[in-house]
Image 1: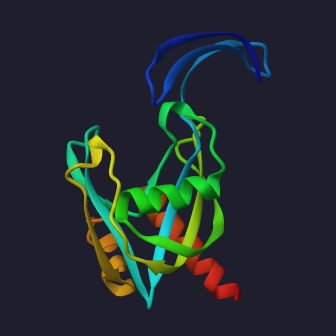
Image 2: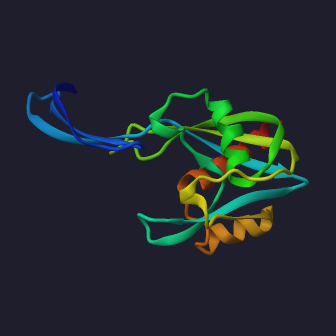
Image 3: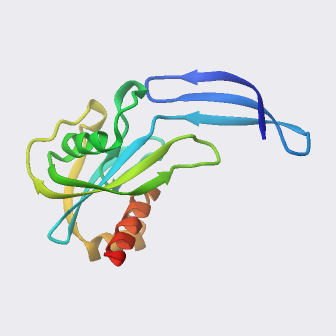
Length: 177
């Protein structure tokens, strides 16, 4: 597939939307709408078999959702993923990790977005004050056992695809250790 044109349709501090004209392998032309967002980091905080989750209102869904701490750098900055992971963990939960280990990479919605993420395991956790952004004012945080987490996924209380995928990466890592 070849890109023949591109134009920015919309931009703000968190994302841009662009429209790309394309030519397919058979020579036919088409149009792609792409959401460009900076890469994100997601953190799986694990302590004594418990997982630390945050719950916040997700405006596009119009509902509150439990998920692992995750986010991007402000103003679409390019930040080292491990540094971003430790920053998101501290900002959202107040936790500081002694060890942050890469679990793997995730693509958010490759049919419409360029955004990619990296999932990290955080261990050796120490509690401190959180440093939440204004959009996170109503965020809650809590510890859950693995069985509670899995039940929440089964029951539809956790529907965040990245959190579920990161948990799967954790399970695969543990299986190979």
